Length: 120
Image: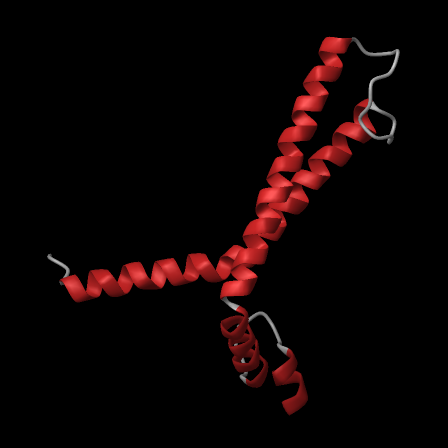
């Protein structure tokens, strides 16, 4: 079965829109995950202190941790930049979506949403 060109375009547009609107949360989640990675290294290998050279590790081991730290920091910087860029592109759209969702009742068989609680 062939799909018409307008339906393909509509499908691609919908996917692109979903990806763009999910960029905010995805970027923050990835930045936070990278920060947790740094914290884990600090807790596991540096007794909760900042990653820094000390007498208990060799220069090669420290270089490995420094590389890992730099990688995590770069991820954080890029994801926060991605968050800021999408915030500047989509502020009205996001506000509009929040307004719509705050005024509508959403139904899920297993959940009660705030709008439904007010109606009881």
